[in-house]
Length: 441
Image (tube, rainbow, N blue to C red; front, side):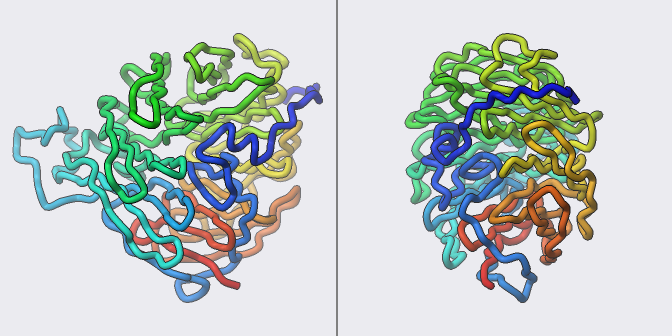
């Protein structure tokens, strides 16, 4: 780590800043995009239970069709989810079902790609809209799905992205308003897809890094028309872009293997860039107090804290990089940034680290979360607690702060890959079979 830390920081963390960066108005009562109202995994007014089971503090449990690892989003009284539902239709020999080609490891079943709305109070399934029906284009990771991109909403429309299977805009009644086919991606080792779209003002931002021509697309959210798009010198990545404001200038920030880049969202001009991450970048950037945090954890560990006020041109190795950390960073899960603390997990398992967000000081590292093995969901935070869910149905609740304290361990009879969502006193967990609403005393 660097020993000298810049002290001049832009005070930008607030709900106003979150609204400038992310979807909708940043209202804490909504979870409009992949990482919540602050895009840091934090529910500012959340206070869900710390204990639950299949027989305790479950308000409702709704079976879901098909398979989807996309994290739900919430607006008002509705929850929106994506899923890929197998049909009974099989592709005959020599027929790709419109897929263009068929990986030998792919399913031979035609799938329906669906958007689902659930009533947040009762758990009732309100509607299910099939936006496309075809054979999945390629194999996906054994822990992945063909519906792994989280949707995003501005409170009027839902933007559902299925990667190689299209981008769709629907209204809150499930009516399809427009669609775009951005082409088939070729992910490294057929690992599958997962970068979620982002909203900024009237712009819908879609990042598509893969093994062929990687692109960033900025579209008009009303009609899907291209505002600008640009090729990227990047291999496969799965990170979701964020937008923030620095000294009166908005920056669209992407995190990937070759470069972390900030674009002018109006025209695509690269404002600054930086090398230093590892391969297969998945965790999304997080921002608070004028500092950007980017990290990766495949075949190495990398974490950089970047002072956005001093980032211009190529900042690799410059003082704009405030500090770095080179161990125990996550491969898949995103970090949580809250109250001056940066929390993250090691690779894809239950070992938690907490750093001081200002200078990288280690408060604790690789504390074992008992009962959690593999882990692909990203942790979330509410009140003074972290909620961390493993694939096996175990969720550990950990006290936030400089000292590690396990509050509780809770188990459900399902497998979990989607990340938790918190609205008020309710915690929503999407399993492979059911969607849970956890609330109560």
